Amino acid sequence: MRDLTYLEEYYNSHDEEGRLLSKHGQVEYVTTMKYIREALRPGGRILEIGAGTGRYSLALAREGCRVDAVELIRHNLDILLGNVRPGDEIEAVLGDALDLSMYADETFDVTLLLGPMYHLYTEADKIQALGEAVRVTKKGGRVLVSYCLNEGTVIMHCFQRGNLRRCLELDMLTEDYHCKSDAKEVFELVRTEDIDRLNRNFPVAREKLVATDGATNYMRGCVDAMDEETFRLYLDYHFSTCERQDLIGASHHALDILRKL
Figure 1 (cartoon, rainbow, N blue to C red):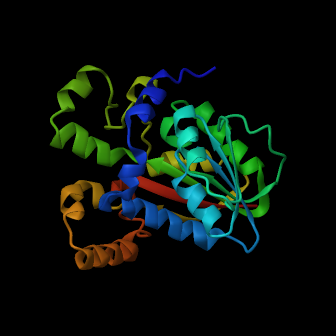
Figure 2 (cartoon, rainbow, N blue to C red):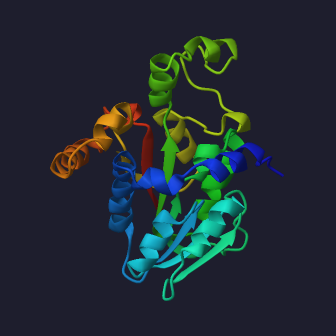
C-alpha cells in the first residue's frame, strides 16, 4: 500500500483548478487539450487515469466524449463529482494508476495518464502505471502521458530561488543534477531519456513528444500580466515551438503521445 500522506496534504491544500485557469496554467491546459483532440476518434471511449478535479475529463465529456475517470485522491474526486452536470457522459471512481483491474484489456480508444507519473518515485511503479495504461488501450489507440521535467526545477528551484546548497546537502541531486524525489518531495522529475527508457518496455510507438508549457513557467509573472492580444500571440509562438525536440527538455511539463502497436 502506498503512503499517500504527503500527496493528500498537497492536493487538499492546492488549488489545481485555479492553476489551470491562470494564464500560465492555460498554456499547459490548451496545449494538452489540442493534442487530446487530435488523438480522438469519433465515438471513441476515453479513460483518464489520475483525473484530478476533472478539468480534462469534464471538458471532454461536454464535447460529447464517453469518459471514464479514475482518481487516487478522495478530495479531488469529490470536486470532480460535484461538478458533473446532467447529461455529462462520465463515470468517475476512486482508484490507483497501478491497478486498473476493473477494466478489461483493450477497452479504450484513448487513455490519458496526465498526472500519475508526477508522483511515482520508482522505476517499477512507473513501468506498472504505464503498463496498465497500455494494457487497457485498444491496438491502434493512443496513450498520452504527462511528465514533470527535471531542468526547469533545477534552474528555478535550485538556482533562481537559492535552494541549491540545501538540495546538495540533503542529497537531492545526482552528480549530473538529476533531481532525486520521494513521497515527501511530492513531485518526481525526469529527463527525456528516462521517458524513452520506460517506453521501451511496451509495444508502443511515439507519435510526438510535446513541451506543454515550454518557456511559460520561467516567465510566469510576465505571462499572467499579458493583455489578451499579447497572450494570443504568445500562444501562437508556443504552438510554433512546442514540438521542437531541441527545446523539449527545458520545459517544465511534457506530453508523450504514443500509439499502441
